[in-house]
Amino acid sequence: MSFEIKEKDLLARIGKIKTKSATIETPLLFPVINPVIQPISPRKINEDFGFETLITNAYILKKRYQNQPAQQGLHGFLDYDGVVMTDSGAYQILVYGDVDVSPKEIVEYQEAIGSDIATILDIPTGWHVTEQHARKTVNETLKRARQFFKQKTRDDILWVGPVQGGRYLNLVAHSARQMSKLPFQIHALGSPTEVMERYRFDTLVDMILTAKINLPPDRPLHLFGAGHPFMFSLAVALGCDLFDSAAYSIYAKEGRYMTENGTHRLHELDYFPCTCPRCSRATPKQARELPNMEREAFLAEHNLYVCAAEIRRIKQAIRDGRLWEHMETRAHSHPALYTAVKRLAKYRDFIEKHSPSTKPSGLFFYNSLSLNRPEIVRHQKLLAERYTPPKQARTLLLVPQTQTKPYSKSYEYKQIRKKLKQETAEAHVCFYAAPFGIVPSELDEVYPLSQHETAMPLDKETTEYVAEQTADYIRRAKPKTVILIHDPQNWNNTVLKAVKKTCKQNNITCTTTKLERTKQDKS
Ligand SMILES: [Zn+2]
Image (tube, rainbow, N blue to C red; front, top):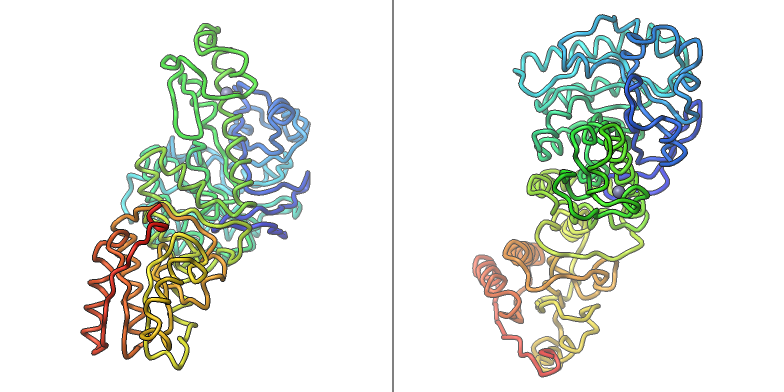
């Protein structure tokens, strides 16, 4: 199978996957259809909501309807023309401990009904388990995966190889590496449902990235049970291409109303913060007064509209190169999500390595959370590994970032040079600037060093980051003299202290001049 990637941002991909029924575009959400009770019909999910995919449970189909879906064909049985993915009953193992079908039977069943994308019967690891038990689930899943390739008879179905291990990251890594060796077309991360119900999005980051690091990048990754739209952008940014969600209908049953930033109880709402076709034509009071089944359908439909809209926003953000900004906005929906975005610091090198280097847009930098952005990590690496300061530069002139960009064309900078004409005649100029740290003047028009907007005043972590980058640069460049233009208004003494200390330690002459602000600067 080819997964044709069209657009990238962070680890997110807009790409095409060819199935036997149709070609689908990632990132993609599969609404979960319970074949027994379903508030919205599959046909409606396709025609009214535009979902070209859905996922249903092969185990439930087999238990409840035996051969009927095989006789009618799965698409005919569901009255649905789109792409159908089937899960295998693994979730039922997680909930009930066991299922009464064999892995071989469930493979045969999915082939018989004609799923477009199908899943082997894996053993979910779960959350409250010992490492020993987790290892068992990983090994048993791997054993079943290997056996599966001797059992399957159809080549037109895309098969999913699930990665297990739960919160034991060493096991997730092992599971992913072993699964990679088998010719699955798609991989999935198993059992994160409990992690998400507990709002352990930081653990989810660890699980997803451990899987990503150890899986082949050209195979799509499915995240089972992704649930709520407020975390879609995080998961997509980390490289999850496919999701399924039953949350839209489970929430509806419980009277819960989703938004892209969180959840409301229907009985607490006075106004609908939504313009979907359902919310546009009713008030919360009217919705509350509907008979039970109708109210549930109302909420399920609204919830599904919200999920669909969020996926579309994420895709547009990928196109625009603004997925980080989008994810950061969503991170403010809940402290647990914010914690998860902070966790990306641990994986900054991996994310940088796999992120595109040019983008259609500039960066918006709000605070130190964004210091892990690939553009900033990449600049830091390029400067340390590839950049050599001009040979004749014995004097290093350090100038603070200016309001206008590029810095070297700014009025403030020209004034500084005029004033220090003699001392700096031979100097090499570097700007110390947020968020990139050190910007050599000859590079300051290179993307994205001038193409960004930064919120002022800077926070402590950002000033410390820039001070640290400045000190690192001095150690590498080894000038004889450093002339620092000190700007206490934007930088306190953070950069000043770091520069003085580094110069002292390396026997470099250091002179400092305080930045004078003209009337024009102040206005
Ligand atoms: Zn709505």
